[in-house]
Length: 192
Image 1 (cartoon, one colour):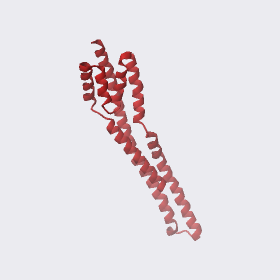
Image 2 (cartoon, helix red, strand yellow):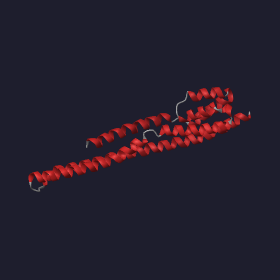
Image 3 (cartoon, one colour):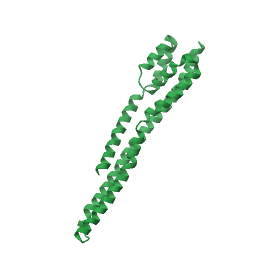
């Protein structure tokens, strides 16, 4: 049962880290884009860059990369926004493969515990040279407990995994939406 518990603990630790990271990555995007637009129109690109530099989260980082390339033209801004959006998405998805591994591994280790428990039950039968419920009960108990723990571990981690995926999907949609807003904002600024 120890390997299943290790999978559960490591999976939960990674899940909690991702949830905290994703929570810290979220900002009020409407307020942020309005602030950037206001600063851009009133004080220029440098002031908007400073605002983005001092704001946390992937959206501010994407804006920063886009604004940094404003002097190279809107096409360069679009390329930077798309490229850096992919980089930020990669940061958001860090450690998801490990959580997925622990989800898959937990039931497998639980089923391995089932096999070990059954082997133990047959060893007890062989040692006692008799079949009785009390002889095989210990091995069957181990078998059932490890299977149950493996399945519970996988279910718990699956809930966290799906929650994390939904948070990432929400952030990615906001990143894409605000990236379009940035390009529109810079297009309008360029016409001034």
